[in-house]
Image 1: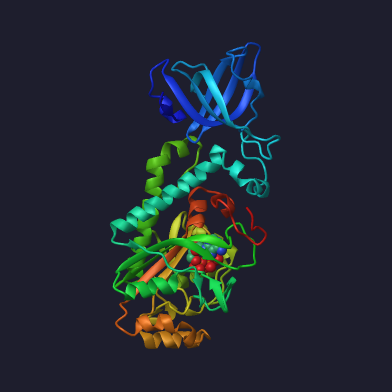
Image 2: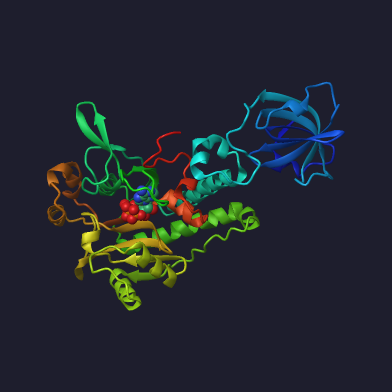
Length: 428
Ligand code: ATP
């Protein structure tokens, strides 16, 4: 007898013998019948059996969430509200669940986020929770596909590092034998070294660690960074790759999960390239007219970003950020060196990506180190790759959890993280 999944049953003929593996979500007992609500990763089915059905086990005693293997006959015209009914003929309990359950699985998500995260493996049994991670995986697949089609090679760079990319702030220290080391905040330096090596276009999907003390709904201390770097390119080229990646991610999700997402009433934002653009200076002018703008050289406050987000409903770029607000490797605009060839991709008031053309001239890089108060000696391994014909290059970094949160309209980034790390949470 073949093993099936719940979603695979619908194409079968009436009375087909089937076998499935999954969990018992609920047990309902009536006068003559027992209904077991069975769940696997693809959906729910009702297993129906007479109360004194067969000389097997007492099905009413099976605890909720026990892992089972079941067999029976598929009923095409089943009476169940779930749409899928099986006349049960055999069941074996593979592993009984303990009682009571710390989280109810059959109810809608009502427990607070912290309780859910404490019992994450049970929480993930809820369809609306596991759906987030199916979507996250699909989004990432869409981006990987787009990047591969555009000549990017996937790479892996070290996550235990000796120097910081951003100059020492927000680093986690690691004791590395006799030396002091850090957890990588970003693969920035390594991906630049790789484009100098002749691999023209690289991307990486890996963890990034930020020892930011604040606890917000948009920050976690370990997130998944999707990074690209491309040789013989500028910020405009990188922005085009970003538009393609975000559209590719959304198209993939709509193709694979569109019906399901529409069914639950979720409106996925559209991402039609080119995305609107506004320069930092234009944004200042706009905010001045609204009566609340930062001085030149300062970042926007959340209120100011909200105001800009109202102007652009959806994805948009803020370009040409002041040098003071960007890291040392960012290329100044040759026509106006007070700003840089940089960009942030925003969705309403939320930042998703930052990117830029990078400095490729070693003299300029040395000056940039000085102006940021950094010691170039700490970066000698990186500087070497600039000495022998480093090509002009550009790139960006997207936070995968941030992107997922925005696209699925989640209120907290932790919802899009299997096992989040934040100021207070180190387990599970
Ligand atoms: P933010 O201003 O949102 O704190 P940032 O300017 O520090 O972000 P970058 O260093 O430019 O961010 O990182 C690139 C991208 O990585 C961000 O646009 C965001 O998507 C993601 N990211 C950065 N920090 C975090 C974090 N603590 N948690 C989750 N995602 C993050």
